[in-house]
Structure formats: structure tokens, C-alpha cells
Image (tube, rainbow, N blue to C red; front, side, top):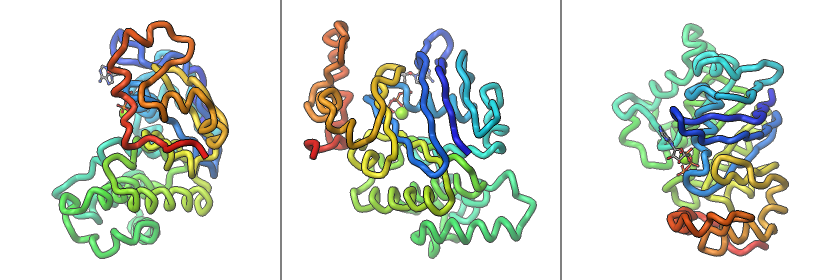
Length: 267
Ligand SMILES: Nc1ncnc2c1ncn2[C@@H]1O[C@H](COP(=O)(O)OP(=O)(O)OP(=O)(O)O)[C@@H](O)[C@H]1O
Ligand SMILES: [Mg+2]
């Protein structure tokens, strides 16, 4: 099932954050969305999962228009949202956290147990920790649990908000390798929001660069890494905007580039 976001407008109260964003995720593919802090990446994911109402534009899941549906209906239609900050329930066990992710098919205990076994197979680290409170897991394990919980409902489309945040490179590689495996094994369509451009572009089939509520560029990840504008934005330190005279009026934008998570020189 594909996810098609067309010309989406959304925001908070009177503040419009997304000004006509179009992003597509095909089944069995990974689309990466990168952009500086405040670009609207999280807002985009919230709008897609129904936590935030779009003011204009359309969101389609497969052949269904889900633009006006609430979060529960969108989840039931096949979309799973793994929000930022890996919000696991710390006092519940790993197993119970997983079960909560399967709320749409809670009554079928056999199917639930089967799915949990599959999810644990994707994230073997969770296997020995099923009875342990989720709060006692390491950051990487909590992120695996957050993704695993999203998988429990057998979604067709998975959207993730900065899953690499604060994790060691080895753990990031492991989680991203699992995402790549889910793409092929389950034909999952994945929308991956990331500040870690290098890691995201390595596994993505298509990439989008967002800037202040709009898609500035899109294309093949390798082509984007070679693009001078992407290099200026992500490799040069200061955040230089294209055709934007107001760039100098926003000195905070220079901080926005989180240099520790940005790609090295383009190869
Ligand atoms: N609940 C909210 N109420 C009002 N404004 C908000 C709210 N959440 C986000 N914003 C504003 O919307 C804009 C986009 O924020 P958003 O969180 O979508 O950016 P982002 O690209 O995810 O940034 P980051 O990389 O820091 O996660 C920002 O200007 C932010 O201040
Ligand atoms: Mg965000």
C-alpha cells in the first residue's frame, strides 16, 4: 500500500507550519525526509497519522483518502507511527509494550503471539528482555521496542520520527538494517524522518529535503548528496538557504544543523 501526501497544509492554531508538502512512499521502499530543526518534519508525521488535522491537501493510503480520518482510523487503515523520543511505557514489560501495539487485533491471542515472535525475530535484542520493564532497557533497545510496537499491528506503512536520535553508530546501523529488511520481507513502505542524513540516505530509495514547511528538493539520495545546496546546508556548517534574502535574519538557523549527525563530505 502506498502513502501519497499531496499539497498538504497543516499547523497549530493560526500558525501554518506546512505550506503545501507533497511526499510519496511506494510499497517496499524507503523515503527519507531530512531538514533542519523546525522545518516541519514532525508536524508532517503528525498530520499523516491523524494527530493533527490538515487544513488543505490530501493524504491517501493505497486507494483510500484518509485526510479527514482520526488517528485510530488511520492506524486501522494500515499506518503505524513511531514518534520521536521512543515513547515506551517504562513500567510495563517489553512484552506488554509490544501487545499494546497490536490493539487492532487484540482479541486474537494466537495471531498476537505469532506476530510478537516475528517482531522479536526482527529485533533479537528484545528476546531475552520480554519480561523486563521497558524503562530498564538501553536507549537503543527502547528504540527497537518502539519500532517493534509499531510493527505489531502489521502495518503497510511505517512512519518514523528520528529513530537514530542519541544512539551509537553501531545501534543505528542495526536498526536501519532491520528497516531495510522490513522493506523487502514485508513489502513495507517506510517514511523515515531523520537528522542523520548519511545513515538515512544510505538506505533510502528516495529522499526529500524540507525547509521551513516546504519540500526544497527531492530525488535519489546519492544525487542529493552531490547537490551543492545540500552540501551547503548539511556539510558547510552554516545553514545557507537558496534564493532566500531573509536567511541572514535568522541567525539561529546556523545552530539548526546538528553537526554531529550530518554527513561527511560527499563521495
Ligand atoms: N504544538 C505546537 N504548537 C505550536 N507550534 C508548534 C508545535 N509543535 C511544533 N511547532 C512549531 O512548528 C514548527 C515545525 O516544528 P516541527 O517539530 O515539525 O519541526 P521538525 O522539523 O520536526 O524539527 P526537529 O528537527 O527539531 O525535530 C516549529 O516552528 C515549531 O516551533
Ligand atoms: Mg521533529
